[in-house]
Length: 306
Image 1 (cartoon, rainbow, N blue to C red):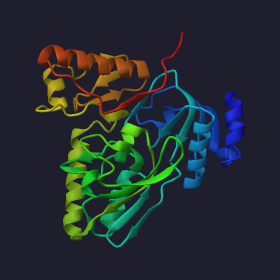
Image 2: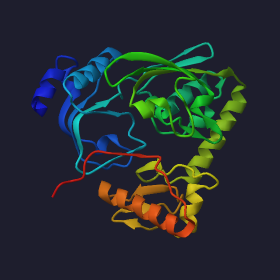
Image 3: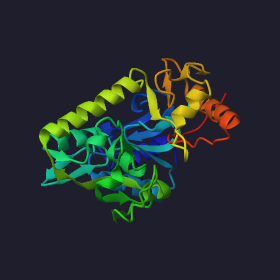
C-alpha cells in the first residue's frame, strides 16, 4: 500500500481536511525539530481515533501517537506510517471533585480549570506543557506532585484498537513510567479525584510554582523540557552543571545556561544536533561521575538519509 492509499482510506474515517500527507512535524513539537510524517491525521472524536488505530493495525501500518509534542524529539528523517495527533480531543469537564479530561487536553489547562473551581491537588501540573495522554504515559510530576497521586482511571486504546479502562493499580504508575508507555497504549481520557480547597491558598501555590518555573527554566527557547530522568541519589541537572557542560552543544543545540537539565534549540538546530548534544552530555557525565543518564524524552523517527 502507498501513502496515498492510506490517506484515501482514512478519508472514510475522518474529515479529509484533517489528513495531511508529508506534513512537517516541526510545527507540532516543542523543540521545533524533526522531519515529515508520511500521513498526519487529527481525529475529532474518540470513535474516529479508535477506527484509525484499528485501520493501522489491520493493514500493518506503523502508527505514532502525538500529543503536545513536549517530551519528544523527532529525527530529521521524519516518521514513516501514520502519525495520529489527539489535539482535537481536548474536552475537560468537572463533576463535583472529579475531573474528566480527554487525552489531547493540555495538562496545564486541566490544572487551571481545577484551580478555577477551588479544587486542590492538581497545582503541581500548572506549568507542565504536555497533554493528558503524555502525562499519563510518563506519570508526569513536578514540585512534589505526580499524576499517580490523583488519578482514578484511564480509558485507553490498545495497539489493536481495543478500548479498555485501566484502574489506578492497573496503570502501574511509577517514576516516569506506566503500563501505557510499556504497552504503547493510546490514552483516550482520564479521570482525576481532587479535593475542595481554599481558593486563596490554591492561587498562591500556583503563583509560587509559576514563578519558580519561569525564573529557573529556559522557557524563551524551544526545548523538550527535562531531557533526563533523575538518577538514584543524584540530580541530573547538578551532574551536568558540575561537568561544565552548560553552554556546550552541537550546532544550534545547547545545554541551557539557565537550567542544565534542559537542552535548547537556539534557532536553527537540527534533530541530529539535539541528539548529538544529548549523547555528549551522557558521555561526559559518565566519564566524570560514572553515572548513566537515562532519557526522559522519547526519540522517534528515522535519520535523514543522504
